[in-house]
Length: 165
Image (cartoon, rainbow, N blue to C red; front, side, top):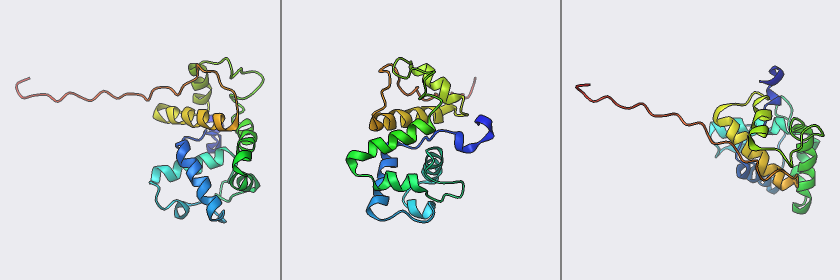
């Protein structure tokens, strides 16, 4: 992980799940702590990925306590949510959204390299870039059309040996 800081690892939850989670909080309320009980229908891996994403975006602290940024994002009117998300993205994804990196002219490999430098690899890299691209689109952040999530790594299946070989 980059600098050994777990909060520096970019989010890798499915963006639709992320949005559904936020909308669910909007319909109910933001609890004092975000934990498994708030995502009772989610798998263990979805819960972990959601908490990591919320931490990376600066929406919860290390104890999973929501903050003012979480309140702003959840309570934002639909037409204003993109602007709130953009502020979070600019802060949390400074490794790809900055003056030294032209995201509008980057390639998929260039973005993947930047995400990989944050300590992400394997299939999580694919998920992290996909999350970033979806969130950037909703936030109105311009991204080169050449940037796509990298293909998930394939693991060739071992061939079964037949008797006599």
